[in-house]
Image 1 (cartoon, protein in one colour):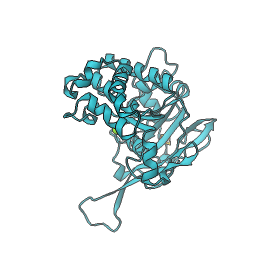
Image 2: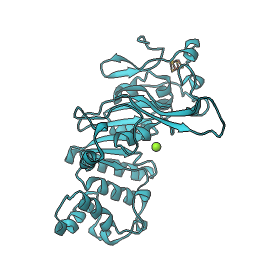
Image 3: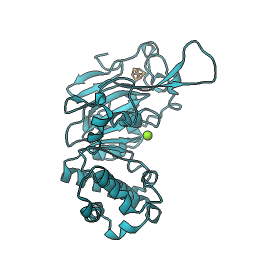
Length: 316
Ligand code: SF4
Ligand code: MG
């Protein structure tokens, strides 16, 4: 609720007021138990930072993270550590998350030992069970990360995340670095595991195509803010925000109700240091009006559970 992360920046020049980057600027959304909530936007929009704030991998500047109604941002480190096993992460590139000097057995044993998931004597058995869960043979246990393909490493990353029997998993672009054919295998595996273990996912991706197939609700981020949020089918079939319209038009699928001419986004995402005045999207917006350069639209709920921040909707 209202999550904010401001980074001070040193531009190497002396100014009266130190500059800050508002990487995440007042972001609020709910994730329901057992669902997959998709968070999308171009790189640099603040989606990974939002995920990292939720898991407290980064301290928030302000705002709250409520877990079953309890603000876990206030927890002391010691209290929070007990929660860590419930809140796990799958990274985009598991190669970076797997220590190249450790065998897979050691990698998977570590969280089992730290969080005392099973008695020491049963660790080996548990490692084999985890490998099986993600579709790998027990022979994988004695190997090192470099002996596996990208897709297999991602399976190991998933096994590691599952090892502590979590309730919530932050999936930060978990398939972005994989070939399309492997992507669907990994997504299917994640879907099966979600059903089996009642997992809740926050699924971060830069494109909307993958998110469409896995999420029940979606939030679209632009320059540190959510600009549109709602049920996946609402967003895909009738996107209201011009930015979402542009993102969706980039991958027209045959079964998509929303069929419009391709909207090409003008220019690059601006630097968050120089956030455009008014609606931050106006320099790239194909529907921008005069008011958009002056005033910032609010994220307003236009239907139950559906909000958008754009002057083209009646609530702004
Ligand atoms: Fe475009 Fe204006 Fe809507 Fe912003 S408020 S998205 S600039 S039409
Ligand atoms: Mg990222």
